[in-house]
Amino acid sequence: MKALVVVAHGSRREASNDEVRELVARLDDSAGGTFSVVCAAFLELAEPSIPDAIVNVIDQGAGHVTVLPYFLSAGRHVASDIPAEIEKARVRRPGVEIRLAEYAGSSEAMLPLLLDLAIS
Amino acid sequence: MKALVVVAHGSRREASNDEVRELVARLDDSAGGTFSVVCAAFLELAEPSIPDAIVNVIDQGAGHVTVLPYFLSAGRHVASDIPAEIEKARVRRPGVEIRLAEYAGSSEAMLPLLLDLAIS
Image (cartoon, rainbow over all chains, first blue to last red; front, side, top):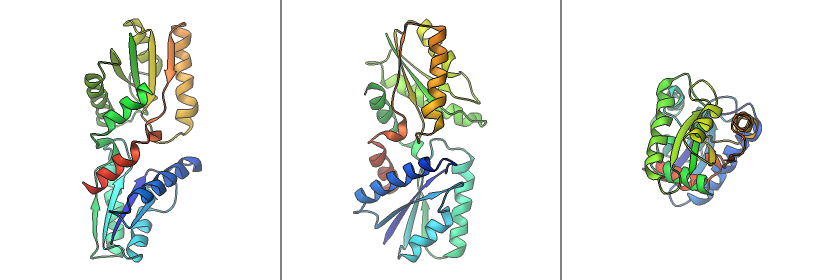
């Protein structure tokens, strides 16, 4: 069983966190063929934390977890902070494959997405 | 002549600002049919500012400017801060149509973009 954990930064503004949760719920609806579970996690300021979310999907039966940073830039959060949080989950549930996907802003699909918004 | 100003938050980490500038340069290459000029601007921590970028494209001949927030959530920055910066440009160059596009995270294309990264 495969799980996907989408990691956002987290905001003091709860509506922003809820916006991420809603996006991830819609992703869960459309990702059924690939991921049995899709959930949101936050680097800071909101719950669940990254290790808590990973441990939770493993305890639901996931034997392979993909962590996807919902970030636009390859800054410190993507390069260091998220890997460090993943490591905390590895300590709590050793032996499960946890893979870090590329961050959102790195996608080649971002260009047409922006252009489409610009002309809408 | 139409111009597109892509607005990012701006970072203390110059590599993140450069990542935005490179993305916008690629957008400029692919948007020639719709926008004669595409440039980056930053809400804070980096240059150019939003009003400076808008004034610059107007002075290059743009009679219509689209401002596109490169943000993932509809927070205070998107709802209040960016419109306030646009207003400063309107005061400096009245009579030019300046339109605020939807922010990146609102795009329906974000779901397939994330799913594609997750399975790559």
